[in-house]
Length: 117
Length: 223
Image (cartoon, rainbow over all chains, first blue to last red; front, side, top):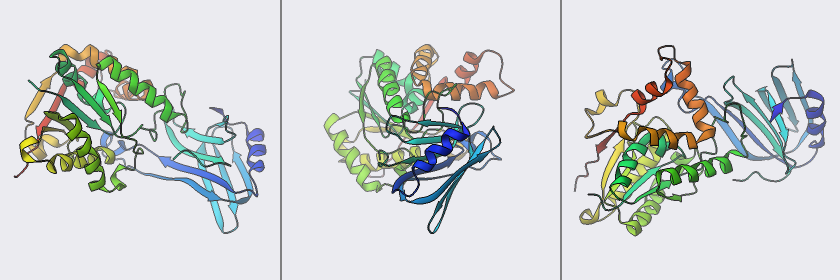
């Protein structure tokens, strides 16, 4: 993956608009968070292969981290803290936010075909 | 001497961090060891440092790392095909029956797994519990011994002193070699040691202190 380039990612996001797509959305601070630090809470959420259609998509940010919002007919999907992206060889847009040690903290991925289960 | 040892953990690298010293000792004695690895660790958060994996490539990368680590440890590998971070949501009896059928085929004399509720990660707890269930379903006459490994910070005060304490100093280089095969994970986790201010400059010495003992409880079945 490479650091997010706003204009490129915006353009790719728009290509997914008004199509049935599959979304992977995830946040995690690791299953060991409260093991290594008893003041920390272990939190995480993930949904894989949510089949959705969005009519609007926007990526916003300050050059360090970015937020992406997808507007659906009856609601929204968004992710905050995105830092890196790649359009992989299956034409899937993979976005992720990594911490200083390269660990994944958040991930938002969009594909026209289902992600491998 | 053991006839055959089966190690059952959910993630590629659990075997190296958890039991690779013990495994090496068994292999030196000529005891065959099989690793039943529950998942491919595809939901891991370490992506290499600097990152070289992403959420979608991680499964394949960790699979290769797992195969390599098992070659280093000279053990057989079977991948069970569950999905990382979902094991606790699977039907426990179904997982147990699956494990039981594999164990009946291999006929081990010893099974090593995580100690349920004392293994920190929900996948560890769930697969440990399913393993203990699986062995419990077997005929008491033909049951292998089960060594359950705790990794909570409080296991000694909660459970008392472990029954098996393997000082694996003699196998430590092998253990570090196996851990290092899990490159996508090891960089980040060894980095954890570097972060800790109490840690002396010599990471290997610190790792030895933390990873140099492998401790297990012998699971007691009633009847």
